[in-house]
Length: 421
Image (cartoon, rainbow, N blue to C red; front, side, top):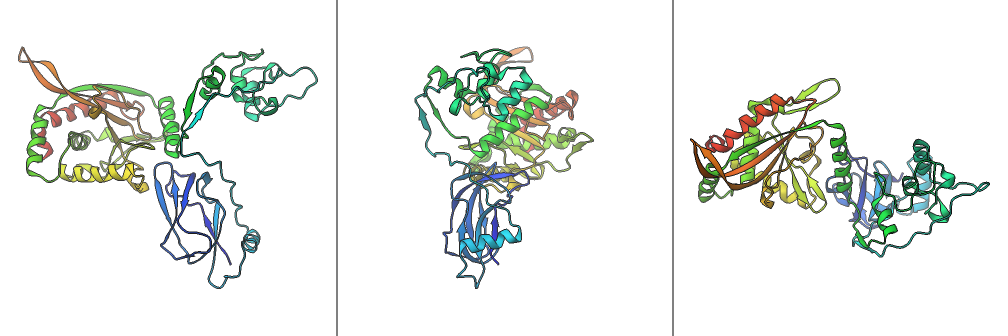
């Protein structure tokens, strides 16, 4: 009996993925444990290993296919003794068995950005009495909800079909508003109408997930923000001393990670998540750290951070950062975590507010250390100051708890020897 190779679920949140390439060709022998394909998930590119032994009879989903649903049939494996089995016979056998039909692959996005010369779309005149209105289901639904008469809307789709952008550009009950730009207007449609030249870079799976999750976070999570200034001259001196005698080169960010972990041990209520029936307070201190990659932002996790030394944090963070940029993190290395750090200090950013990483309740935005005038004992002096802003989910973490966390974090940064004892 031929064996089905299905699109695997490589993480608990994965519902679809992109099949980037096959490492085995049709007719080649496959053994258990061999890597047969690479799949791009919502966070990383991962290798898929064969479970069964046999001959790769037929590849049903070609390399480069996008948005392939989990558990879709992507290939067929012929078992031992089925050398004469054809792909058609295998498909018939699987259909009798009730196997899922292979999913039609979404169009493959070009690797190189496509330049647009802003083609002028053909716009059909409004529908007159007696003509059938041709519109997409989404356009019809938007028109119904907005009270727009589709009969007076000009269609810019194929054959005069009314599409989403046409309805969004039409005032309620009237003709299309031409170049009116209502809230939520499609940027590509507007750019084409205005003759704006642009490059279109296809969105990766990671970029799409980032957009979806951050939009939901800002819309659904009630953010509030707390900012504190920390003097880091002593921290810089400690870091210099450590790096002079240690092979593990410690960064300021490593020190911030360690300080956050120790502060969470002192204020565990900040290490929490909101659910409708309970607030989950985590027993372990697992700190996520934002890493910029070519595909978008990834947040690898340092597990049980409070139990690790600065040297251990430094070594682990370097490894996670490299593999995050290469798209080689395992799901358990970037899913979960109870608290996130986003550091833009290396770019010279003085201060910023980060968007909470659901389902976590807090994210600490770390700015650059810079020399500022400060007052000490009535005297103006110069100190290296770093501004840190805590974004907090007010449903699960109260303002007082956020303030307590920063109050615990500040002395760990300003008197940093507690980070190494």
